[in-house]
Length: 311
Image (cartoon, rainbow, N blue to C red; front, side):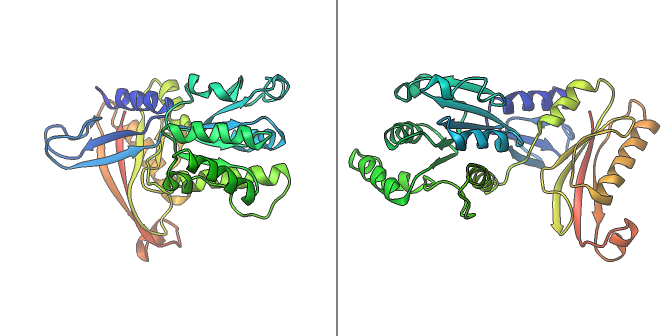
């Protein structure tokens, strides 16, 4: 499997919402290759990639309408569910990836993706409880439920009496959202979205964005993929950030912006222009402290290692 084929397969798996482990081999006869299984020997870069967030909103009310607008600015797949046709139509939720009109008692009949983020904002506590029971019964990345502390406590008591563990209930974010002090649907939607982002980013994950996938699909000529593999200090970009560069210097994705990104773009463009048909697999280091930072025109400190590989 070529490097480009590996990344296309990676993006295919991530679209399903899966978390994917990947290894980049750094030395030996297989140097520069990638695998989805751990190599038997040698030095390698191991990464876990986060699948695209699968977000499920139960309830089609005013908060859900505001949530649709906020959530669709993020890289995720959004499903909205309500048992009332007038609250679950395409004319109401035009930006969601999927809108379902169905009974909350039949949630187990639907595939909501791999380890979804569940947001429970139905019209009443009975439906909230049905949705919460289902969410707790399947693998999930997050569960949040709207409601007062009193309503939440009563719901938890009923579930505990039915045998659901206190440990499982303690993982439910209820009342939902970060404490921003907002009361309007828009403010509540922002607080919920912020909590989803906070939960998602608590685990270190590499990213392979939809923009990178589009670049791989669109560009038929040679490309350079730049990946941040190590950083210290206040250097830009985070570990696992990626950027594709084509022969014209056009890019897909980012490794943090600034002068380092500009320098890498120039180096990648120069390699593609001067080394037609040649392979590149090289780790380059950029010193962003004292003289190193001054030479790059930067005032931040730190150190960053970037893997450049031709695709």
